[in-house]
Length: 190
Image (cartoon, rainbow, N blue to C red; front, side):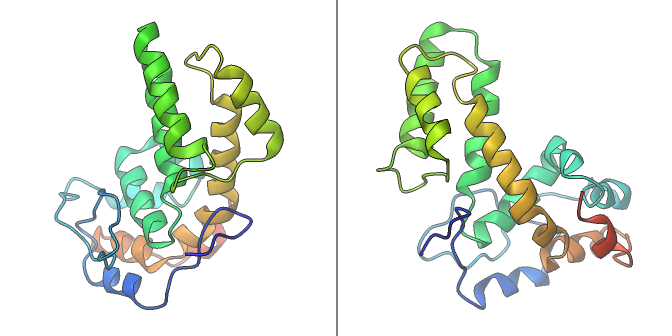
């Protein structure tokens, strides 16, 4: 997959269209080369139309909902940019850690998985943020990746969020939950 300046690749046409068939179950496993973006079994029966609708009202609401993050992750996986939310989630996990040894271990894993130029899941960061991370890695803390996490959060918000709200993945899930997609194009921009 060829990467663009925004850090996301172009998905080949077709495979993600299969996802429009069933939106009460979605996957959270990483994609494999043989994956076709088909839905996997997962229980979303507890979702309400109001909760799913709220995801179109703001990116913050989407990201504060664990179900919302799972659905958005599936969307990003089909766009070949799942590494963005995986990095963001790993940074959130690091912030909760209090053990200094675990902090250092988790920070190194995040660096190797998402920041290193040798990583197959490298996120798109500018040189200024990479410099900050390299300095922070000399003595990692829970806040080592704050600048990078904010940059990736902003990238997902600006680049992927409006496409998500207008995607068949989101719209069909909303319909399945009993919601209306009538005014989504107007609301999915904040």
